[in-house]
Amino acid sequence: MAHDTPTLEATKRERLGSRYAKRERAKGRLPAVIFGHGSEPAHVTIDEKAMALALKHGSHVVNVKFGSTTETCLVKDLQFGYLGDNVIHVDLARVNLDEVVTVNVAIHFVGVPELAKKPGNIATHDLAQLEVRCKVRDIPEDIRIDLSVAMTGMTFTVGEIKLPAGVTAAVPAETVVCRIQTVTEEATGEAAAPTEAASAPEVITAKKDEKAEGAPKA
Image (cartoon, helix red, strand yellow):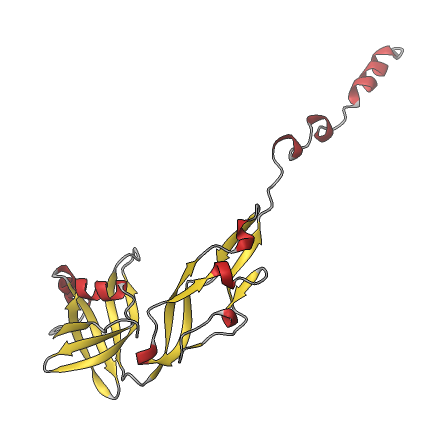
């Protein structure tokens, strides 16, 4: 792993349910469950700020100190509040460092593709994360892609990413990561709108009315 594994202290949850979980969050404690490796799930709480800091630094693995034991856990799932801006629950899976896992790793794009510098071209990012498989100890903090030198043609695919040793992509190699698109300006003003004369229907009743006025009365 690219950085030291943070150690978080956990406290057993005495009561379960959304009402009690809300009370824990009000005290700055994040509800969590630790599961896996044939052991019973452990319902705990973790300091919310410590967990948020670990996630901010891209930690996929944390050491959880629970009672007299410390377990290595993979951040398996995060549950967010209804606004989507805060974590309200976390699932932690027990792992060992040599275990092969599948995780999503953030992609950081650097550089600007040469094609995107030309007028009318823009670079769009199709992926923000890449699903990879590797040992727990080899999980990268992030995946950096230098588009200024890596872009070939009009698209950049997963197969063109240079991954760290021991890390393989868990999605097809032809999956598009980034692409260059040409923006076509729509016609505006007089060029876009039909002229009033062209769009208005031809009026033919006037001459008919004049003939009617000149006709002999019965």
